[in-house]
Length: 94
Image (cartoon, rainbow, N blue to C red):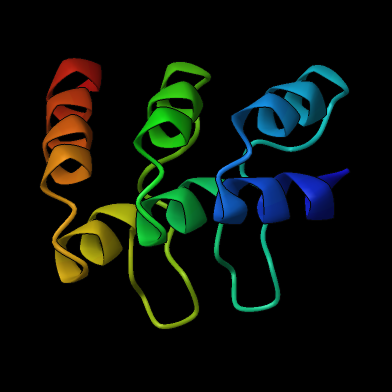
């Protein structure tokens, strides 16, 4: 289930992301380089999945093997809407 969740976050399939979480997949599952579903959704610009994962309590502070967070990757690819969402969410949660 975790692998399907990671792939669905990467490829923008919100329906499957929701299904995998409902079936008990780990919202903070890691791939081979420690990327999470949230990181992958940020990397590929899937705003709706980022919003859903944040609402579902994904940890936005987990880092990859290279020490990058979901916010770092969203900034790198200049997904301004995702950057704003992550920054707002971080302020609200604190």
